[in-house]
Image 1 (spheres, rainbow, N blue to C red):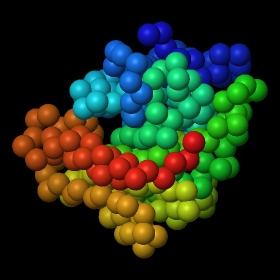
Image 2: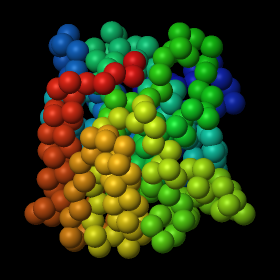
Image 3: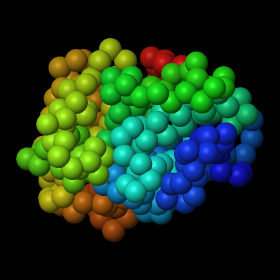
Length: 270
C-alpha cells in the first residue's frame, strides 16, 4: 500500500525524514477489522529513527495480530512545536476517518513510541494534544486525536535532566525555553481521557532516566488509570525490540497481553 500522506493538500507541510509527513502501512490480508498500532520512532525531536524503532516494530506487532502504521513526522530542521504533535494528531484522525478502508477498529488504536517518540505518543493520550490544531479541512477534522491506549518505551516523560531529557526539549521548543518545560510534562497533563498505559524502561538507561517512567506510572495509578510498568535491570537506551537480550525482549508480548486485558472492556474515544 502506498504511504498515506498526512497533509496532501498543504504545500507548507512537505518535508519529514522520508519525504512528506506520512504513515507507512503494515496490514493483514482479509476483511476482519483489527486493532491498530501507531508506531512513533524516537530521535530526540531532531530526527526520526526508522528501522529498529519503526518498520521492525511494526512487523512485530503485525505478527501479534494488529495492523501497524509507522509515523514519519516533522521535527528538527523540518519543524519544532507544534509540528510533530500536529502530524501525530492528524495521523490518528486519518486512521479513524479511513477505518473501513483500512479494516481497522477505530476504538482500538494504540500509540507506541520510543524515547522522544514516546513523548510524542504520550501527547496523544494527555491534555497536551488539546493545544494542537490538526485540522485540514476534511472529514477527519471532526474525529478525536486521542488514542485508546499508549505503549511508551523508554520514554521522555519530561524535559528537565534529573528525570527527563533536556536535549529533546531544546529540539522541540528551541533554546532558551526551559521555563516552558512543565507545560509539556506528560505526568502533569493526565486527565479523564487519558487511556490505559504500558511503560517499559531499563534501570541502566543513562540517556533518559527511568525515573520519569516511574513517576508517570505513579501518577496514572493515583488517577486509577490502568497502567503496566516493566523496569528491566540491564540494557542501554535505544533498545528497540531488544532482540539481543534474554529479558527485555519480552516487552512486545507483555504489551500485547496488556492491550488484550484492558481492551476486553474498552473505553472508547472515537
